[in-house]
Image (cartoon, rainbow, N blue to C red):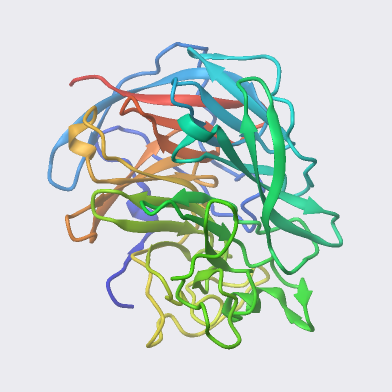
Length: 413
């Protein structure tokens, strides 16, 4: 495999922090892992023990973990408003707001009905790049029934208390069955267009059009297993890579993805990074560009959940190799690129949440986007989202029935 790093079990040790992340990657990212470290017990606004995190260059960064809010039910995504307030989605179908560090008890009205089953529900929240002018908020969610459902994107105006004039601006063209692989991360590009990640539809034995649904990831007429690029009103940009191509949906931007749960744009290097779930092992970090094929399910390091090969091919000409492969699986969810000044030793690094490993994986990059190494930061709960806040600190959501909003802060040590 070209230009990639395979992460082994031994590399999951934390050096310099003194914590070992133990555990076995399990078949489904929607389940809790067995034999993992017990959750860290913290109280609101109480700082956990400080730690030191070394980088590949030998620099260390002291940090501490602070709990900002508790009692979030399966929180999924964070977005900041210009005044510093945070919007947070809860997968059962609620949109919450944190103002001045306090989670308001009443959910925001106007959220659409969602299919809150399996991995589905209310997922991403994103605000328009010109929110201060237009007050537009975007939501992704699963819609339909367990027999026929799809990912949707809706936008609405937020008046400070409720969503108004909500309208569906995009939905996946194909319906699927089951509650797996909705994707749903959004990132905005400098030209004002958005990228939206969409999962492949699910694991065997789920089928579509007489074959395993995961094969839709290689079908350019399908939205499943893709990143699509849209204008802010849901229309298709004229310069998308497959516009005007026969047998291709014009919204498709990249393809051959299984289930992207981390998506971020590096504004400094102008790169798009994603993390995506494999099946049994084979989770990936990918550097994505328009029109590229990332191989799933023809090329993969994953194994079938029931045992055996999904494919014997790990690389193929014309398909892009991952930058990192995680086996055993981390179940990566949430992805941030750190571009702030509060953690000097971490500047330019990626931070990937882990559902199975219950950590945040700091991925050390050089200026060319090559992976130098990585280090797990133990959280002790399933990590669903990781974001850099406007204050230059890192924020984490934990995927629990009593989920938390956490913040990593520098200690100056």
